[in-house]
Structure formats: structure tokens, C-alpha cells
Amino acid sequence: MAEFTVGDTDFLVDGRPVRLLSGALHYFRVHEAQWDHRLAMLRAMGLNCVETYVPWNLHEPEPGRYADADALGRFLDAAQAAGLSAIVRPGPYICAEWENGGLPHWLTGRLGRRVRTDDAEYLGHVERWFTRLLPQVVERQIGLGGPVIMVQVENEYGSYGSDQGYLRHLVDLLRGCGVTVPLFTSDGPEDHMLTGGSVPGVLATVNFGAGARESFRTLRRHQPRGPLMCMEFWCGWFDHWGGEHVVRDPADAAAALREILECGASVNVYMAHGGTNFAGWAGANRGGGALHMGGLQPDVTSYDYDAPIDEYGRPTEKFRLFRDVLALFQAGPLPELPPAPAALGAPVRVELTEWAPLDEVLETLGGDESEGPVPPTFEELGVDRGLVRYRVGVPGTRQPYPLGVSGLRDLAVVYVDGVRAGVLSGEDAALEEPVAGPAAVELWVESLGRVNYGPRTGEPKGIAGGVLHERQYLHGVRARGLRLDAFEEADAVAKVPFRAPAEEGSTGLYRASFEVSEPGDASLELPGWTRGFAWVNGFDLGRYWSAGPQHTLYVPGPVLRVGTNEVWVLELEAAGTSVRLSGVTFSPGLRPGPRARPQTVRRSGAKPR
Image (cartoon, rainbow, N blue to C red; front, side):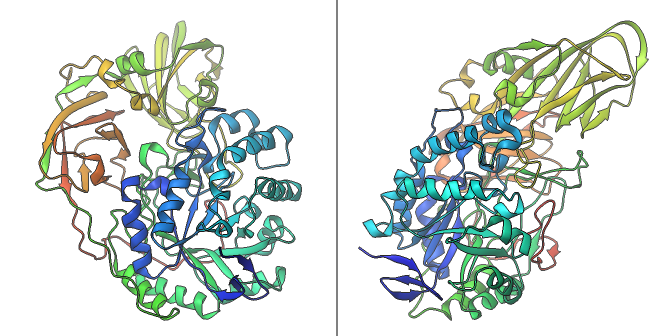
């Protein structure tokens, strides 16, 4: 058994200096059947370690009810089999451009601003979760023959708060649960971030995309001794719906990586392989954005991140350049690339001829309807990812007045007396045409992802204010939620009453079967569709949206099977008629897109890594 420790200048294994060449790969963003391939790709790039976050909300959808909470342990076993050490970042908050920064909606809905503080109720929930999660980390620590060498305390806390009691409590909790490997924090290389996020006696690391020498000088002002490490080297960036696709010049990124290593530091490439925000788990930021939804910037389904290993698991030019740099800082030849994953054979075009209207989908799969004086939020209805139908009446007789919503999160498709009247977005929005009374109003509101970074993390979804006619609140609101995970329940969709579409473009759930002779990785195109979610064989591929910049969804090869397959599409605005699946080649190369300037070390608001 080996011992991993933090020395005055280096990381040490049994007293011998080692450099960590790590890459971020989130097990929850990669189909489990593809873990081995992606980990082998990390080794082939020249890395000796893998880092992953742990999303609390994915594994505890309701208090005390756990969902595949042992997945981390299986991933750590796969990492060890691939010859990689492992860094675990369990949160409880992770950011990661993930829904609510990984915090459960039921937790933030109840506690609000008390999360991420030394609040007794919040810490009680954290302790229960860590008691469930951490044994699979503890039993895989390096001292017991496992791959785990370090564990993080919280995540970038200096970008959020300054509650040192909270951080110290987490340190004590991690140690009390049996974590004996070195702990660390990670923050931006700025004085206020390192002051707020560091813990005396715990190794501090820094996150940046460029300017290694300046960043490490800042770190040294706060931590005179200890190994230097960039815990997140931002080699790319993520995209927002309605924005441009962001890429970073591979040569520029490789030069920034080399500068880190020339400083004698260790590094964690963020992301080495980004993966996909399946099942609507993408987060959001605040701070303007192309869609102008009250400052909301929802993240796209792809988490490609312009990483050296792209969303489909393919090596890019950035991969080749990083491999060349990493080879300079280690002895011996690097492993060869693993065999390419299989790709879908012949393309498949699928006509979606079975349909059920949204009302009937909601009736079959939705929760109970509530009624009260004001609109309940998603949190109050127990909806994490999905949509809510709000119904309210405009009393009459009264003349036409503006009909609007205050505190709207995020989009609402509005119907007046059964006729679509418009799509509202933003904190305060109103229909273009006034509405007279009496009238029956329906608002179908979809959550586009909870904010994952900054002071508005954990804000409620749905209608946080009210429905207004002129300046008067309309009371007596009925609400019913439709959770995305309702589609995952066994035979749930089979209960939906499908039939032929009533008219072209209708909203609702569409279904069709198709044949495949050679399964493999594929992309799903949805020409003519507007906004919604798509499933293949019950696997939720995530959100599609004609707003772009993403125009196809990744279909992991293990999802498809020889013979008959099934696709579902839940359209929320205006439907197309068919979808198309095409095979994905493994040929390395750059993806087209606008070039982004090198990222700076400073950030604020929407976390400009």
C-alpha cells in the first residue's frame, strides 16, 4: 500500500516527488458503458490522474431517496483499472455548469440563502448525504490500495462566501467520515477568493485559463509552502442557448498548459473530456445573454467544452498538441490510442406519426394539481427538471388590459381561451395583445436550468411572482407539474394515449419505431422542431432548441440495439415531422466554430473561465 502526502514543494508518494497530470472527466456526463474508453483516452493523452465532481441532486432526488448513489465507486474502480489515480470533488456544491450547482432543488427551495453556510439544518442534510456517499471514497483511498489520492473541500467557495465556520465544519465532517488522504480547496487566483475559500492547514489550489506565473504568484502570497497546482486549467469553454459556439485556439491552449508545467506545478485539465448534459441536467448563469430572458443564460445540452477529447470521445488537434506537451514532462512513451468506438451504420430517417397532446401527457404522467391564491414555484410542486402548467381565470366582464407575469422563470407558452397568444420570457413580461375578461389563461412554463454559479444559485423556478392583468394580480391559480423523470418510470410512456397528430406543428409527445442493423455512436438531427426533449429507447438525450448553437444531440452507441428501436420527442412550441440519426466518425480534427480569445484569469458574474 502506498501513501500520498503533501510536501513543502511537491506531492509525494511514499516520500518520492510526483507531478499530478490530471484531467477532468465527469462520470455522470458519460454513458457508463463508455467509461473505459474515455479513461483510456486520458491515459493516451499523457495523463496519470482523473478528477470528477459528484452531483448531489442527481443521486438524492428526494430527501432520503437515493438514485444510483454507488456510481462513483464503480467509476473509481474503472479509473484504477485504467491505471489512473483519482481526485474526488464531492461538494456539496460543485458548480460544474450543472443544474443548481449540484444542490438538490428540495434543499435550496426550503433553505434559500442558508445553503453553503454554517446553518444547522443545511449541515444536517450535508452530513446525511456525506455519510451515504463517502464510504465508497474511503474504501478506495490509496492507503487501502485504491486510486483516490485527494478530496476537495466544497468548491470555489471564495467566489461565493466567507463563512469560515462552514468550511471548517466540512473539513471535520470529511475527516470524521474516514477521509485520510490530503484535502484541498480550489479558487480563482484573486486575493478575495483565496481569502474567502481557503482553510488553514488545507492545501489551496487555483483555477485559471491563462497566466500561470501571475496566478501562482498570487497563490504564494496566501500559501508560502506546498506544491503548486492549477486544479482547473480551463482549456475551453461552454455554450449558452442562443449564443455563439465557443472554441479556443489549440496552440494557445497548449502554450498555456506548457507554462503551468514549466512553473513546476501539477495540473488538472478542465475539461479533458466534457461529455453531455443528458436528461436536462444543464445549468444556467445570470448576466445578459443572447436570449434576453431577464439575464438568464441557459447552458446547452452538449458539454463538449472544446476539450481535447470531444463530446463523441474523439481526439482533436488540441489532444495531439496537449499530448506533445505532456510527453515532455514524463519519462517513457505514452500509451497508444484505444480502438475507436463503433459508429452507427446506415443513416436512419424516422417519421414521427404517433402523437399525444401536452394536456393528455400531463394527465397521464404529471403530478397532482394544486390550487391556491398565488402560483406555486417548481420547488413547491416538487419539480426539479420539467415543466408546469399554470391555469388562471381573468374575471369579467372587463375591457382588454395587458396580461403579463412577474418573476417568470424562464419561458412561458401562453394560451388564452385555448388559442396560443405568445411566448413570454424574462423576469417581467407581457403579451403583445391585451386580453379582455372573462378569459381562461394557461401558461406552460419550462425550467431551462437552475443557476449554478454566483449569488443567485438556488433561486426558485416557475412563476416566483404572479400573473398580472393590468396591475392587478390574478388569484386562484391551479398548477400541475410534469417531471422529466416521470418518462423514465417503467412502461410510463406506454400508458400515454397516442394517435395521429391533430395538425402539423402541434405541441405534445411524439413516438416512432425504427430499425438498426449496425448500432453505434450517432447524432440526432431534429429539422423543423423548436424546443423540447428527445429520448432513444427510454434514454433521455437532453434538450434540443432551434435557438442554437447546438443543432444535434449525441446518441451514445450503447443506447442503440440491433433490430427495433424507439424514439420519443416532447415538443413544447412547434413540432417538425421527422428526425434523422447519422453515424459519427472517429476521424480526429477541429470542429468548425468562431474562435474565442484566450480566457483571462479574472471572472465575475457568469463565471467567465
